[in-house]
Length: 87
Image 1 (cartoon, rainbow, N blue to C red):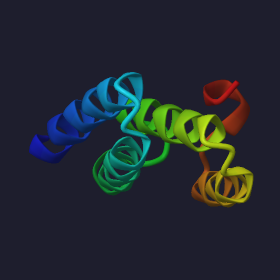
Image 2 (image 1 turned 45 degrees about the horizontal axis):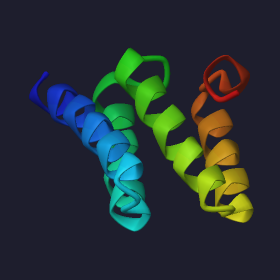
Image 3 (image 1 turned 180 degrees about the vertical axis):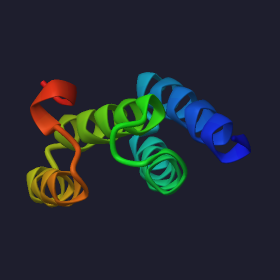
C-alpha cells in the first residue's frame, strides 16, 4: 500500500519535473515509479498504468525512441495492454 502511494507521488513529481524542463530527473522518477508500481500492484494496476504513461511520454519527448521501444517490449512482456495506455 505504502509503495503504491509513493509510486503515485513519484508519477506526479515526474510530471511536474517534465513541465519544468528537468527531463533527466523526471525520467529517473518515472522509471522508479513504474518499477515500484509493477512490483506492488502488478501490470494492470492504475498506478502502474499512470507511471508507464508518464515514463513513455518522457522518453518520446526526449526523442529516446530506442528506450521507448525497449519500454514497450518490457511492458508487453509483463502483460500491460500498451495501446490502452500509451497513445
